[in-house]
Image 1 (cartoon, rainbow, N blue to C red):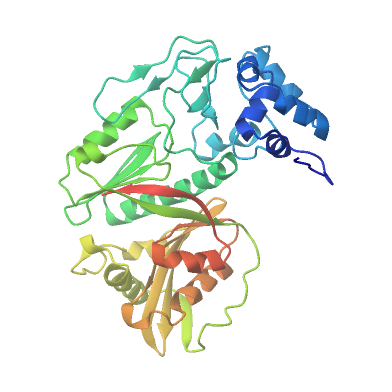
Image 2: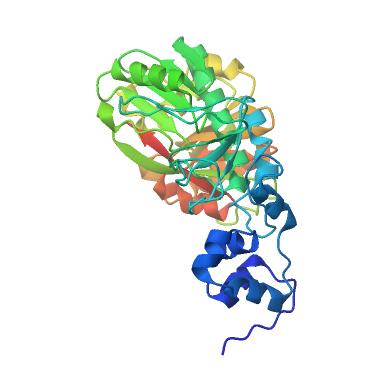
Length: 404
C-alpha cells in the first residue's frame, strides 16, 4: 500500500502522486472540473484531504466565471501558469496591446469556446485573427467579450518564467542588427512584429521576429520580403519558433538562446598566461576582428573578405558596442562583439581561429566580456560552444529557429 510521509507543506504534485494521476488532472479535479471528476472518480480529492492540501480558491473562482476571465493559478505549477510574470513581458518588447499567458492542452470543457485545443489565452477587448504562413485564409475566433482563445497550440510555448529572458535576448539582437544596418548603410525596416535588414547580394536579407504572435499584416510583409530574395540570401531568426517558412524553400535549424544573470565569474584558472584579451580601440584592430569573424566564425556571405563590409569602422563610435581581440603568443587568435542596450547585453560572433582552438581562447574572451559588462548577458550558442557557456553560468532559455 502506498504511503507518503510529509515533512513539508503538501503540493499539487504530491497530491497527484498519491492519487496516481497527472498534475493536470489533479489540478482540474481540485478546481471543480465536474467532467473530470465524473471520468476519474474521487482519488484526487481523497488524496488532497489525506495530505491536508486545500483546493485553490482563486482558481475555483476563475473557473466559475465570476471574474469573466479564465485561468488557473496554483503555487507549484511554475512555468505552466505564470500570469503575474507575463503581465509585464510585453512592455519589454514594446508590445503593449496584448498580454498573454501559457495555457494547458487538456480538454477545456468549462471554457465558452468551440475551439478548445491547447494554445494560449490572449486577454483583450476585441476578436483576434490567427494568421497562417501557408497562404490559407486567416482563421477568426468567435465574437467574445474579453478573452480570445487561440485555435492552435503555438510552437513557441516557453515556460512563463523564461519568457521575460527571451524578450530581453530578442530586443538585444534587434539592437545589434539596427547598429549593423545603420553603419553598413543597409535598409532597415521596423514593424511591431519584426525588424529586417536588407543588404546587397553578399549581405542578403536578415529578418528577426520580435513577437511570438506577429499579426497578419506583419506575417504577410515578412513573407513577401523573404519571397523576393533567392535561396542563400535570406535568414529568418525566430526566437519564439512561431512561424513556418518551409513554403518559401527555407530550412530550419535550432540554436539555444542563453542568458546569464549578474553573478561573480570564477577565475579562468585554465587560461594560458600567453593569451591576452584587449578591448578594440583602433581601426586596425577592428579590421583584425572583422577578418577573424568572417573567416573563422565564419560568415560565408562575406567571403572573400573585404575590409569594412561586415564590421564597419563606424561601429567603434557606436554607443553600447564593444569589440574584443584575443592574442596567443603574440598571434591573433580570436574575437567577439558585444552590444549593450538598456539593462541587457548580448555577445555575438565569439570566434577562435582553427589553429588556436582548444587553447582557452574562447574562455578568455568570455571572461573579458563578463568583467566588462553589467546586468543580464544573452547569447545564441552554437553546439560546440554550449559547454563553455554552461560552465560560465549561462542558462538555456529556449531553442530559437533559424530559417535559411
